[in-house]
Amino acid sequence: MSTIQLDIVTAERLLFSELVEGVVVPGEIGELTILPRHAPLLSSLKSGELRVITGGEERYIAISGGFMEVLGNTITVLADTAERSEEIDIERAEEAFKVAQEEMESAVSDVDLQKALASLRRSRIRIKVARRKRSNTPTIQT
Amino acid sequence: MPSVRQIKRRIRSVQNTAKITKAMSMIAASKMRRSQEMASRGRPYSDRMRDLLAHLSAQPRDEESVHPLLRQREVRRVGVVHITPDRGLTGGLNSNINRSIAQFILDSNNSSDVVAVGKKGRDFLSQGGQKVKAAFSDLGDRPSLLDTTPISSIVIQDYTHENLDSVYISYAKFVSTTVQTPVIYPLLPVIPSELRPEDAVGYIYEPSSDEVLSNLLPRYVEMQIYHAILESIASEQSARMVAMQNATDSANEMIDDLTLVMNKARQESITTELLDIVSGAVAVEA
Image (cartoon, rainbow over all chains, first blue to last red; front, side):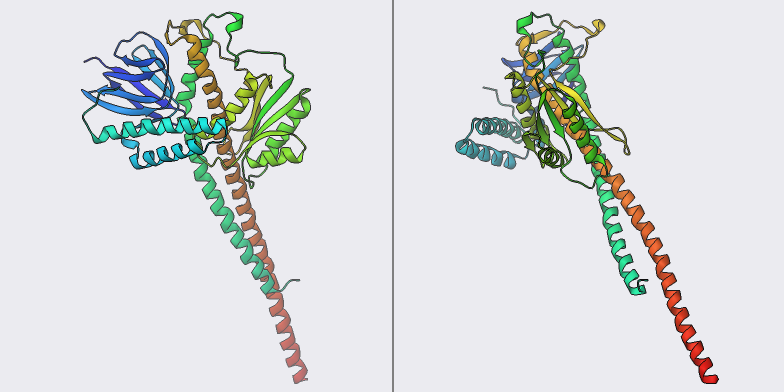
């Protein structure tokens, strides 16, 4: 099985660096699957779930926007934030979701609203990714 | 001449001070290590981003479609993001960075807008009568990128709305544990590094090179500000570590001196007492 090197970095740390069989990323205009020996590609990513296919399994990482570069059998994902599904504390994520909802309702200014919306979106993805580790059967993305 | 008891009290108080400064210096040392680690962990990200930016901006495009953050224009209004610590006890660090920004504002012929990050810089500037456009503080020792994005969005907005024609960033660069130099360098317009011809790759762009570039540029600015803040934290902690180490040393020196004085005073009092007794005895015998 051919593999491709996947590095996921954020401004705060190097999150992931392994050889993988493929990866599905949330591209700006739809999901993209990158397999080994992909042509050079530079894409913006939106917030969402990144699926890593390795050893016939799927692993999930929540990212909130960023870029992906594919070059010479290496994929580099520059994410604004990234968390593995195991790292996410689902209770805290749900808490954050509620807080974000409340903030959105009480937002006075545009800036507040934008902030609340962003954290709402972020926590929704985090909850989704965190749930993945509980039910090990991968569900189909809608 | 103070009495032995007075000196003793003094010594005890200096000892307490030394204990506090020693603890502070040790705390600062561990915080410094952590912030240095944080700064170095983010390096792969910033390196890749710089490369991508070089690639993207090397793409041919006509004059009008140049992204607003790359566009250079005649400078009338200058903005500065001034990053300082929130707290003192950092030796000469705070006054050095503040002096450097004051010099910069005085030297520039244009009117300047300042965004202050950190209480020390904010207080200094507002006391000096400089208008502070926005102030951020209490970012903590380990800020996340999200904590710092509001700072970048202010300057990016001002730049794109042409309220500012160039933006600089000012902070204390971490050179080594003992050396931190105030630096001021341009942030906007973004000047991408030159792409070496042998590095050029024919990328497929998704959705398009312009769109990727316009997503990348604000993040690039954010990242630069974030890095400056991390570095400024490392500088603050190392300056504090050294300052507190010096304070501990001089407190210990002072304890030694005071002990000497105290011993002298004690001996003197014993001598006088002895003299009294002896002279008393002589008087009785006579």
